[in-house]
Structures are given as structure tokens and as C-alpha cells.
Length: 286
Image 1: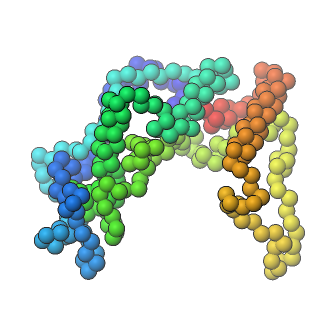
Image 2: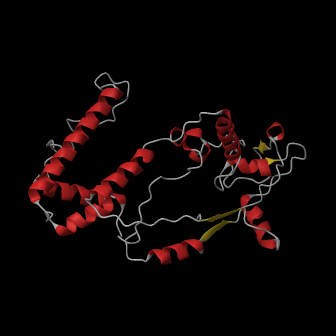
Image 3: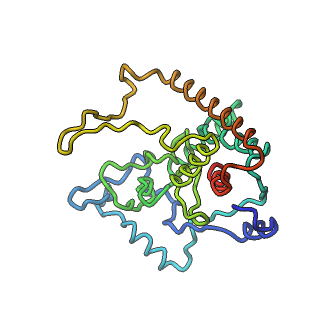
């Protein structure tokens, strides 16, 4: 968010902001693992294992909530009491420090951010995983069978506690979507647009032409097969270096690029090559 709003206003907006999730209730476990609903091929739905009665469909369960005057949302999400909004200027030591702090955790799995060192911590993580293992993550989650509701667009083979969504996995526990979201409302640009702007700014700064790193084209007659065929390299291909070598090569290339950009900035002085491209880079790269 650009620094155009007072921090007091941000605090008041955060205090008044909340989000409600109106889903069927998950307070009562109607079908434990040893008594799970079964798939009926003829009805194309999950049925009670004893009565063979189809479970309520997702839309029917939502309609029941609308008809219940005492119904309450399953989840209510609010901001916490702590809110620290800090403006950051591009190309400053503070910006580099904060970017390094963010990328440190963006490149880690959730289970690697904190190492459990005591039995109490390990028990807490185990209990948290067990809880999120059976918590429905979306209308299509198989965990709805545990609470007596058909998942939206139900299909055979679904079983509570075995949803493959990332929110249930130990390495991404609790994170069901992207870690970084790009706001398109203030810029009207996609992530590809921001990358292209950043790339154009770097090329202008380094004095590199637009066609510097484009692959050479191969001329061939129309209607004839191309003499070059492209395919994705597999990890077991003999000409693909080991992963360790590829990572070291990528790190070395990144260090060289950062050094070249820093040297070009120092030569260019306080004025960027193009003010408009520089401004786009500051927002897209941060």
C-alpha cells in the first residue's frame, strides 16, 4: 500500500474490518474414520453407511443455514491488536534489510521457520496438525464428509483427513494459497507486467539491448517440420547437471547480476535512466 493514508486511519480501518465464513457447522463429528460415508455409483453421491441415505448436497447445506435464524458463521477473522505500518523507500538500506527479512521466510517451508526443541512444542505442533487435518479448507474439501455434508462436486475416492490441499500438509500447514499476492487494483498490471517493467529498467540501467538474451530463431519453410524440437528437461536426463550444481550456478549468476546493477547505479548517479521505469521497478520489486 502506498504511503498516502495516515497510520491512525489504517489502525481504525483494521479494527473495523472482519470477514465471516458462512459454512455448515463442524462442531459435531457425525461420521468418524471407522464409520465413514460410502460412495454410491448409482446416486453419484456419498450415502450413510447404514441407511444408504444420501448426505445433504453442498447447496442444500447452505440453504439450511439461511433458514436457521440462530445460525452463526463458522469462522470470523479479524486483524490482531498489533498493527505496524511503516513506509519504505526504494533503493535504501532499510528496503534491502526488509526485503532480505521477507525473502528469508518466503523461501522456507512453514515447518522450517521454527524448530521444535521440547516435547511440549512437538506435542503442540502435532495437535495443530491433527486439528487442521480434519478442518474443511474449501467447499470441495473431503473433510465435509466427516460432518455429514457432501463436498461440492463430490467424486468417488474422497475420504476425510486425506485432503491433498496444501493447507493440511505439515510443510505448508495453515497456508492454503499463495504466500505473495499481487494487487492489481492500484496498478492495473499483472505479475508478468511488473516483471517486464523490472526487466526493462535493469536493461536500461545496464545499457543492454532488448534482444540481448533472446534465443536465435531458426528459419524453415512453411509447411515443413521445424529442424529444432523443444522439450522440458527431466531430472534424470544425462545432460542435466545435479541439483546442487544448478543451485550454485543460479546463486553465482544472481551475485554477478546484483554486483553489475550496483555498479551501474553508482555510475548513473542519483538520477535513474528513466524515471517512469524506475518507479515501476520500485513497486514491482518490493
